[in-house]
Length: 521
Ligand code: XMP
Image (cartoon, rainbow, N blue to C red; front, side, top):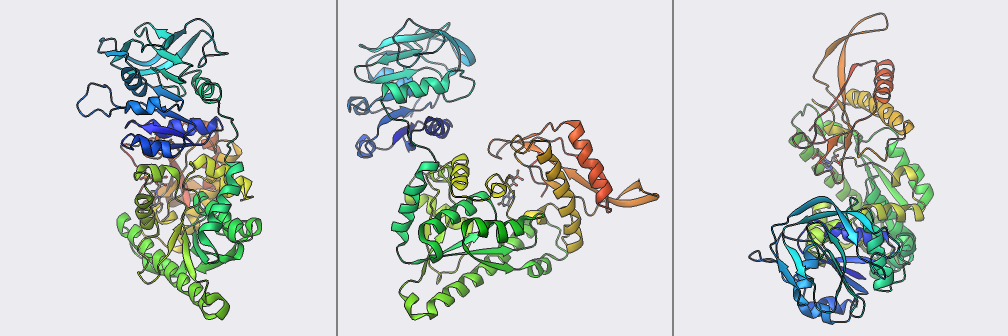
């Protein structure tokens, strides 16, 4: 792999993604990892990420110079560039020439590896206080900016490169090409990795892990669990049993999509548990959001646990199967979870266990996490490769508690039916307008305990408002309200008030996050 050494900035994962977009496999490792351990991974190249503002800061992560002497191509970015320049004998100083944001860079002369085939002046994205003032011996200076004479260095003999800016952010116009030049030319790596062509490797790995044992998977209808299940199915066929708990809080068509389309496309052995009544009963009269969440979570665990026992029982009874017990549980853990929990095998497992919740001790499963090396967009590519229906592959995020937390007030069957209709109309119109990939998600919220007066058809109505909550976001941690065109909003509003009798008012939520969360509860 190409190792991206994380110096503590938020950019390491982004760099890793960009490397993969250049069709080269990458992994993020913490800067605290000993050089010997990094080299044991036989990296094809190493990238040093940005990090804290200054190499002089107390406790600033240090670069072990041994990394630069191992003969492995290295590319330093921003802080990584400075610590590299310093370790190679260059000079880093506080010049006071702080640069932040889009900056013009001038490429010096010809014969550069990083800038081959690019314009001689380009916009780059900077964020630094210190500067490299003297390049290390043997390194050529190949770019500069007004405030930073040494903005890029290249040493083709030792295959060491660095830029002061952040090529991984899109504001750096040529950023991806600079990165590709490093990977393909500087480091001489063949660009052959794609999420599609790793499917075979992932399948083989699952097969080796699982052997002849049986595997269980809780299918939610979301992208991650669906693709994980499809992959495991590809690997071990009907050794896998999927359990889908229909809690009745899904949107229109979603349960059918899982029960019919997904099964048809992948051939998984699916157990559907119709728990709609059970959830409604447990939720009756409950209005507090946290109480709802807790109830839904607990019921889910109980229903899944029972289904798991049934599956275990079913296979345990047959003599031939007794030596192949249900030993594994599939989890749709993704690479960001793995990196964020420290990258170690154990750390991510602890977090994944939380996703399943408190499964009882006597049901001891090992975890199969076939997506743990992949980013979300790559999971989608793998899903397409495996033939998972597009409606599932491109599904926007949908909360586990489902429509239960989009009815403000108590949840009942009638209210669910109203919200399901209104939500389906909004989704239909947003899809028709081609906005699905621009919008992160668009919760539709029923203000069930609020009534408003309207005129519909022949007379006065006393109905309920629904709220449209379209948001744009990168990761759901922060979000902005999405500027959906007025005519699309108008279509949604007209259709909902025409087609859903109980709703006589459609309102738009124009709050960013923070202060508002994406969901209303
Ligand atoms: P908030 O409302 O916290 O939502 O801004 C952030 C993202 O998380 C989703 N969400 C949930 N997902 N269980 C889930 O699996 C939950 O209880 C839950 N609550 C919110 C929400 O849809 C958004 O994408």
